[in-house]
Image (cartoon, rainbow, N blue to C red; front, side, top):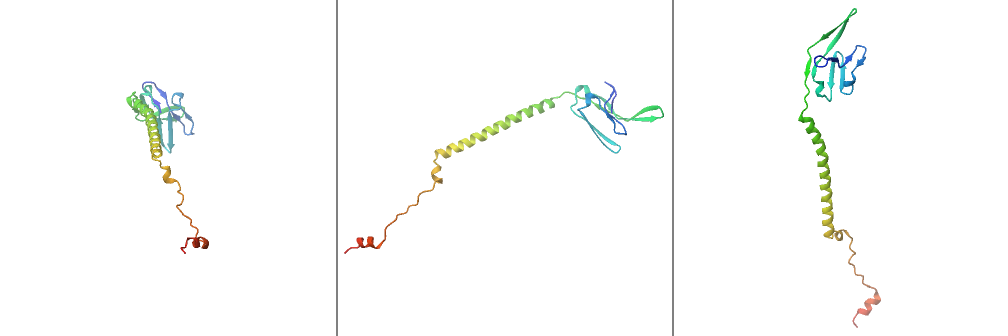
Length: 148
């Protein structure tokens, strides 16, 4: 992959023996995958100075001569836009939204607990002692209660 107009240089060089050369400027921002004769090249984090015409070229050795066979290139125009800013703004505001949701949930829990405490809800969950009256029904006690 070559840059051809603004700043001519080699961006990616891959040989048949799988030797690869990537300049330091693109080392962390370039990925490529190869399947047979097809290659997919992806550039990440583009900057304005990356604007150029990019051309895939094949190096052909014929004896001692080396020639580059190139196909039509791709014009890449990188322009600083509002989208990058809005993505940063959205990622920053998402923390605010999550924080507010957590605070609201905690306040609702506190409100429910206070309401239940004020309503003396504890008395509904306590075991009441059984209402039982024991009476002595033995013979001697019955004899005392009989009318003579």
